Image (cartoon, rainbow, N blue to C red):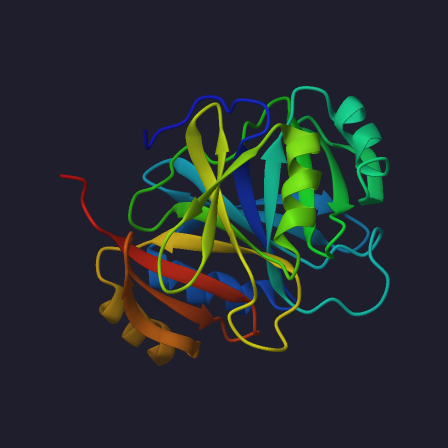
Length: 260
């Protein structure tokens, strides 16, 4: 289902980019995916805005300045993932007993909802979201929209136990040259997990955007100042590539194989 009006508790529901140059990032992604932007003030003292990307009148994702109150040190530009929960306080209370770290306890995001920032036991960071006025992305799995979340982790058993405890996720191992695990909730595929494909990649949640043509998207991204981390290649779900935007944030693009 491409249009979304709600998300079941435990389901990934939103992604946003924290970047050091919102103006440049908006230009890059706007031209790459055809997004428009709706800037919402979030911190008058810093003149900061939360730029919601829209496509065909749907909210797709957002581009934001770096979060300064909840992380220490310099955090490079990156895409972050959010998981919807029905009870934020109850879910946040499970984090530490399950082996994770509560980086930012639950807090209000104006009238949009409430969120918390957590780190799993393997080191990857993810956000919890309890919706009020905003459910998350209202259009997914179509060209130009967010389509998949993927945990890169060195310890799949530990991650499996943590997210199973926190969200009730189950796993399904997929056969192939590169071992891959899919996350499921209530029998529905909601994301993936794999070991780092090469040395030096830290634990992280990666994201995929659906496209009409992977090779054409890669060519356009490079013409706009982006970088190719992994060139287009065919995998069972479709043809994908790993890119970096001009500020260095990583993201994946994929042309899905149509279901027969």
